[in-house]
Length: 238
Image (cartoon, rainbow, N blue to C red; front, side, top):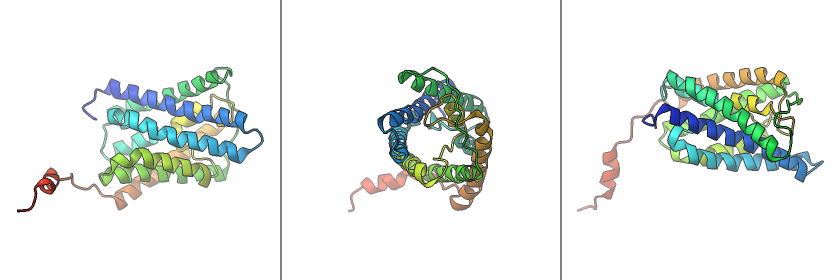
């Protein structure tokens, strides 16, 4: 995918991030309307939509840009040598802009004001600790697959992890600085107050830093697969 021109990859990151934010925010609005008074069911509906949406979006945009949709993923990828620093200058702005646009689109789809700044404060010590764990786990899922030549499993694995992390983390697993920013633009079920965003970003970056050390320890870069091994399996024994 490094052969794909950078503008095309940045567009894929923008669109994927926009779809992701629209899914998170839009399904949160729908859940609040469909299941009023039942927070557990609302969270389940929000998590299910996000998990299955991620599966589809990674399938759509993965072959073009790698389907990061997340500045921490891009930063860890650069630190591991999988992508150039120049790519960050295109990827991260595209991801943040995409998440903002996606949140605005979700607001409009449900007849709300295009921009409504969230008033939901989330930056408690427990939530910030949860964001460290959520981000750490997400990075391990993504890069363990990449480093063991199982990248084709990423759409299902990432979707499954995020769906589970909605429930096993107290913060509902934002695990993404770009989605933090986007969700601040919607004062709805999935929103986060702008005052909480910086602390979330710091926690997520710290989780990414921890993941970087563990990835290097657990999954040292494996040699490329030898295509002769696949060819050999096709030759019948004599």
